Length: 297
Image (tube, rainbow, N blue to C red; front, top):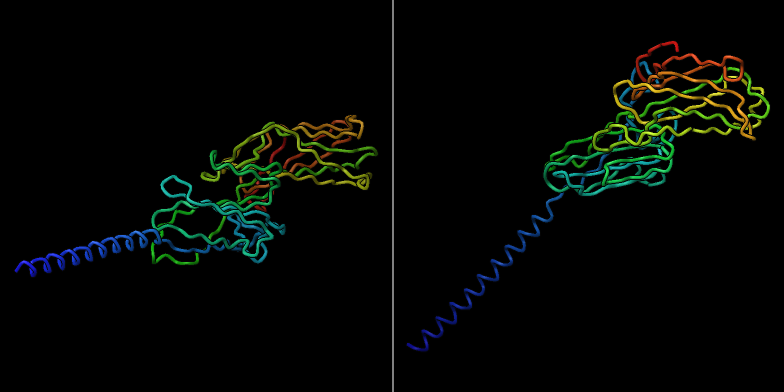
């Protein structure tokens, strides 16, 4: 009897140990299963021209060309947030083989994903300030996508970005004089950055934007100078000084523009004389991007 009881006790102990090991293994497998609950999703940035316009108000981009207004885009950022926390970020450049088709492994759950595509020069990303700022802004597109990721979510998602830039176009009608070296455009307010979570403009400055004028332009007319900035959807205004100088910093021409109007996805055109006495510019707003507004200043 004593030997039998011992054997039964040993057998029970072995069985209990086996159960404990199985339980531990089960929980480890469960943890691994929870940790692997991700969905790999490829986002494709599309291109689609609107009917009756060269470029639509909501201009999509395409992997085949990644262009807007016929010019190559250079950078694409994707920032993935869950519960206000940045989970991952992707930065693609135009030389990447998969440019325009970023692939993300997304945790199951609610995501806010932010897309920015631009061809601005010298970009600086700050995830602390939630901003992208360019030394020289250019055409830029943005989109926020809310997404609930599950096992059933599509592995391919198409995203259409909207333009968040405005454009100032200056045309100098009179002939370029001998000795002209630079023309500077100095808005009192100009936005060099974007809040990538809200799409609103940031980092305003009144710095002059300087264009070097080659000697080959001397004697020519209708010199065109264009610059981009970020903009809100509501119209805003700013004063602008246009100054022409020689290589010795002598002033050759000056014009003051008051209350120039700007708006996201719209070109503001000013045309006029800069070197003749009483230099002046007249305003038109280009309707290629949006509805035209015409004013005098």
